[in-house]
Image 1: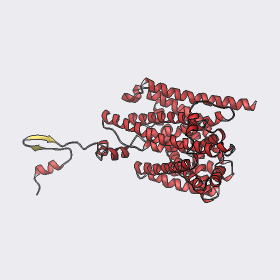
Image 2: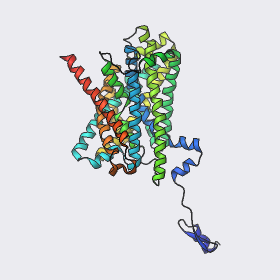
Image 3: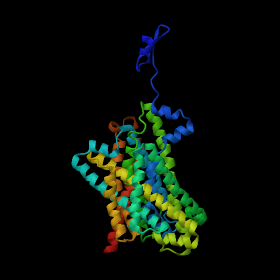
Length: 443
């Protein structure tokens, strides 16, 4: 029979006598310590992930539409817009992840605590409208991809897209890492499709890329496309989502661990969003090399893009494009639904089942598919609408991350806040320029 001392020593949180001296049990290592004990490479890979989930929204089907239209109509003219938008995205996603890390709350939850109820209601309504525009682009894009690759009618392809997105969302219920791995796998599939197409079609684009780095517009629809590219890149719903992904992932036990996690967040954003930026650049280069260079400046619909790839280059390039479009739509629509739940719960403290939200957000997209609306036009204009929602996400982010009473030791440095406010200002100016040019065209 075990001695009384042995039984007591076996109990958690107790001490025993060693050499006449009382020795406390060592505390269990923190979750971060356990992860990092796996080794530098394995530990780092285990921590990375949230920015990759966010980056999926930066290469959704809306990006396909705007980037291919920009490349086919204007060549490499708008390369600088893609680069600028990606730099903005890196800054924004890093700061929203920092907000989540230091407050343990999502951006909408902080808004609910700081702003009055009526303003939060407004913020929720506009965020839901933007979410509908987002889901239209993502859901429709996946359905178009299924139609192009397998010949499935658009409406039926939309039903299939919805069913598959339920499966992807189901991974989130089984743990954050499984969901992240599923989304990253789809993201890498998108990247693989465009890397293949680039080396088949656009691998002579390097001089063209250099010529497009200088910021300039050329009249016509270049302003609309520039705003569309930014709207398709800096996505309001993942600004909200990325902060929520930090809440219950790895809880730091002290400021030292919080600082370590912040460094990993920086790396996560740099790698994940750089991958998204490269994919966007590859899209524009492929369109410029295949269409603009040959005078096919009116090839900007996803169907004709796929068909011309098959005719001019071969079925392999067209297949890679179609598969990338499917993977992009499936992954980004799942992320968008997840973000919608974060928005509703954060601003209004309401929650509905994810399955019901997915069903509700499918309806506008199925209507567009059923009415046979020009899908590329719908995608481009949805991205322009998205750009108008960006300030409503970025202004609160800028306000909160510069307040020490909210962020504590994570408060922004002055230069960081200036850079974020400059980002907000650039996007706002572009939006007003779009309104001016649109009204001038009507009068």
